[in-house]
Length: 164
Image 1 (cartoon, helix red, strand yellow):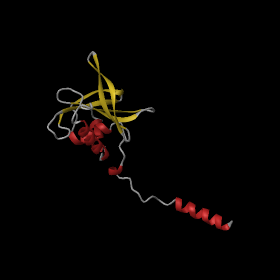
Image 2: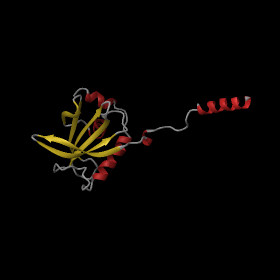
Image 3: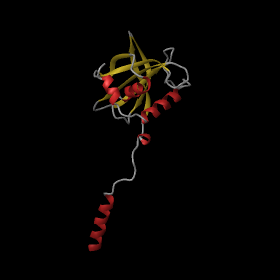
Image 4: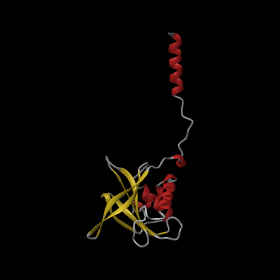
């Protein structure tokens, strides 16, 4: 009985040992998916692809990513999902360094049922850049996944964002 008790205490002590692994930003898992969403443009509704990231710290992560890499946004629109989370729009962005210019809408939501940050990306002709037919689609997704994984402090972004 005494040996069993000592073994149990020893096991408990070992199980309380701190982990040797460190979760760095580079190791952070970034779950994403491309979903089709309706977008109202004037009197018309179109279906567009939206890139959503789920393993995030804030619904504003897409906006922070864009600000950190391309500076202040060009336009602010009402949010697609929440009135207090607007869409920020960047125009004429050479997103993946291929010379093509994109218009990017960054948005997101933080509710009890949904928590994601998102991008809708249009090419210079106004076409959906996240369609499976687009040759640059995978490069765009890979670029944003990498940047999302490396996202740092939001302090500078929030100081500008709150002034909007």
